Length: 293
Image 1 (spheres, rainbow, N blue to C red):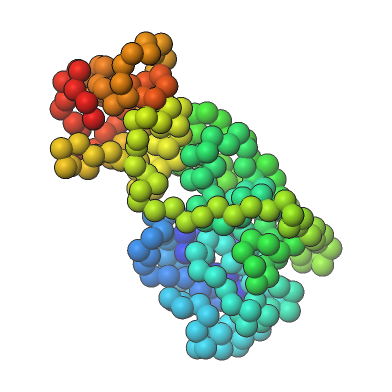
Image 2 (cartoon, rainbow, N blue to C red; image 1 turned 45 degrees about the vertical axis):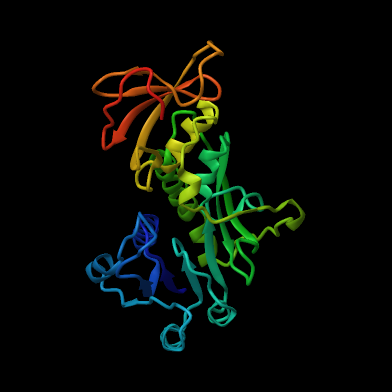
């Protein structure tokens, strides 16, 4: 089975490594030299060179030259894992047995953009790891393999990302032999149960102290490293919050945004409900108790 692999993030590298360990016949890889929007960007060139695999930079994966290159490799299957650009129908139609994509939710629920961030930000208790055969829609093709992932209250963007990778690698090990023997099962998605998450922007990461402490905590953990971090403004300066914790605070006559505790390591701010302790701020803010953010 001849495989072309497309990917450009940390997850892509781990998945490609797993396929190599499974002695998959990887005949070519498309990757990116750099990325302006993937904080977990990973150039797969070095891994390919170490394993004597043909590799090509593909800033426009749907370009005519790239399509010709992939066609020349005569793939049976394409794995497209960790690629933020849509594949056009001409590319999807190249491999004889289809293109396998990946989405870290329980499809058909929560299709669309930034699934790990939205899962944490919205306080979801579980998400999923879904491999599927790509069609011209977004995350809408037949499911090849799916598993649930529990989201603990202590999880953040980094720990959930690693859970996703660990789960996906187990799935690859399970379904790859079925692909080889052509015994894989495909499950059609129920499109009536689908919803789509939108693309996030910088405003979505801004802390509003009128939010509940739980909501602020979910926001900060969803955007922590490797992502951009949640943020707030004070005296025309931007501060990034990497870590926070909910603090029970029963007094109701304190306005949101008031600093109720401050030391040289962290500050605690009254929220719309309870309070939030900002445990890691960059740069650290020197502010007195009783001040307002």
